[in-house]
Length: 486
Image (cartoon, rainbow, N blue to C red; front, side, top):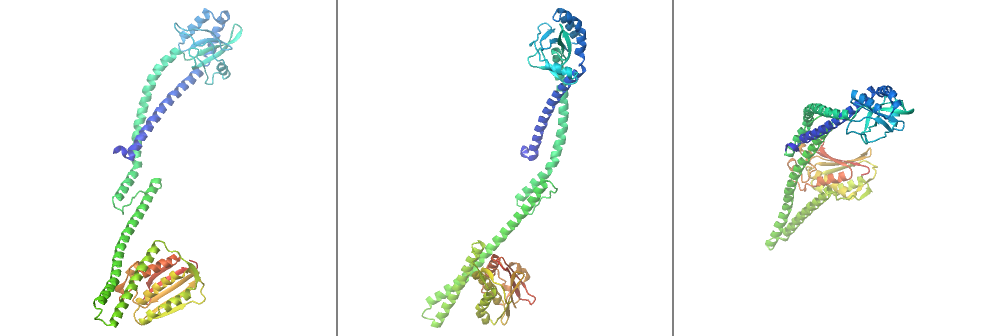
C-alpha cells in the first residue's frame, strides 16, 4: 500500500535519478581528471624533449642506431622511468629506442603531424601522439626537432609510459574509487534527506486534496478543500470546489425533482380520480335507477358526466402539452399578427366566464402597436390560461385589468385582478406544475394547476419573460415581457 502512494513513487523516482546522476558525475569527474592530468603533464614537460635532444646530438652523429644511442636512451629512462624516448625521422619512422626484456614496440611508424603541431604551438596546446607500444592508443608527449645523419628528425618522448600507466591506474583506481564513493555517499545522504523532506512538504497539499476528495466521495457533499495558492494544484483545488458545488446543486435538484415527481403523481392521481369517480357514479346511477329518475335528472347526470369528461380531457391534454414543452418537442409556427387584436379576442372569449361571476374585464391597449411574429395558437393559449386564472381567483363584482404597451422594442402585457393576492412564500412556486394556492383564495378552484406552467413555457419559447407579484392594490399581477422579434 505504501508503494502505491504518490509520495512513495516520487521518492523512488528521485532515488533512481540521484543514483544515475551520481554515477554519471563520477564518470565525468574521472574522465575530466584524466584529461586534466594529461594537459598539465604535457605543458610542464614541453621542454623535456628539447633538453634530451641537446644531450643526444653528439651521439646521434656517430651512430643513430647503434648501442651507444640505446644506452644513452636507457640511461635517461632510468633517471626518469615515467617516460619512453624514441628517435624518429621526418616521415615518422622509428630509428632508435630502448625497451626492456620481453618488451617491444608494436608499430615502427607514427604519425608526424601531431609533432609538427606540438612544435608550432611551442607545447602550449594539449596534443596527443601515437604510442608505439600499442596499436591505436594516443598519449601526451614532448617533441623536439634534431638532425639525424644530416637529415631532419625528431626526439619523441612519451611522457607516460607503460610502467607509469600501470602504477598510476593501480593508485588512481584505489584512490578515485575510495574518494569518489565516499563523496558520492555523503552527497547522496544529504540529497536524500533534503529531497525527501522537500517532497514531503510539496506533496502535503496533494495528500490533503486526496483526503478532501475521499471525504466528498463518502457522501459529505458540503465538504470543500481549503488549498490555496497560485500554482496548478491550487487551480485544481479550485476546480474541484466548483465541481463539488455543481454536484451538490445537481443532487439537490434531483431531490427536489424527485419530490416534485412524487407530488406530481399524487396530484395527477387526485385530479384524475375526481372526474372518473364522478363519471362512474353518475353512469351507475343511470343504469341502476333508469326507471326511477325523471328525464330532467337524466339530462343533468349526462351534462355532469360530460363536464367531467371535458375536465378529464383538458387535464390529459395539458399533461401531454407540458411533457412536449419540457422535452423540447414543440416547434413554433411563427406568423406576424397583432397582439392587440389577439388579446381582444381572448377577452371576448372569456366574457361568459367573467359575466357569470359578475366580474368586469378592463382591456387597455396602446394604439398603433407593431405586429408581433410568433405562434398564434400557443400564444393565445398562454394568455387565456393567465386570464382564466385571474378571473377564477377574483371575487364577485371584482375587476380584472389587461394592459398592453410597447416601449424600447419590448411588448409588455399586464394582467391584474382585485383578489386577495398571492402569499409571498408561494410566489417562487406559482409557475410550478400542479401548484395551487387554494388556501389563499375564497372559492374552490376548478383549474388543473398546469395552466400557469404551460403559459411560462410558451412565453419563454418566444424569448420572453413572465413574472408574478402582488400589485399595490393587493391583487395578483402577472407581467409578460416579449421582444419584437421572438
